[in-house]
Image (cartoon, rainbow, N blue to C red; front, side, top):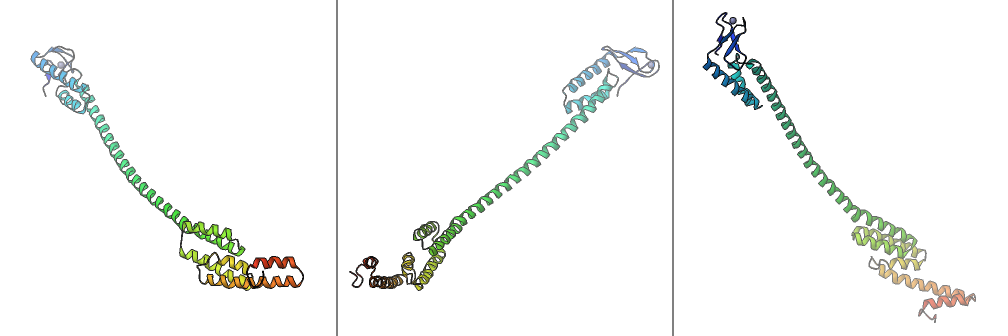
Length: 259
Ligand SMILES: [Zn+2]
């Protein structure tokens, strides 16, 4: 590092104005310095100021290097300190920016992972809902419809029985469910026949003509019903209740000598 020295006390000469006049920082003496040297340092100083004004880390670094070499030129010492401060400041900003970017990257990765997981869960939930809906439509509803049809078997409401059974069949033709229904209708019709209620027994059996020996039972019960009607009609006749007797005989059609 080159310093201009005071001729009187040997102290450092500082250049304060835009001329080759130096002032001793020790005794305050004013001395002219070598003009060529002055011009060289003056050029360096202004080059450093330009670098500093760029406001970049590289600019401040280059300026600081020059100001450090020429502390005797004008305010180079102060400018040197300012450059160092600015470098620290900008590097800290840069580091913070990198940290922020890294954090953002991390968060967006996390978000992506979360979104992927959310999509998978949504697909699973939709699948579960679809399966549940399928089970409800294909199993639960038909089962309930068959249950209602069976309830109506005991009330011998053939219209309702047919309504519920055909609704169930539209949704599910499960043999197991149909079997439950057929079995209920079949066994209840037998109970009715045992109570000599052949009319209702026949009504029920005609809903399940293909089941077991339903067809045979219908023939058998029809025969029994006719005999029952005939004997009732005879009974009315013998008691002189001709009107009722006639009605029953008519309902028998060609049966025996009713005509
Ligand atoms: Zn001096």
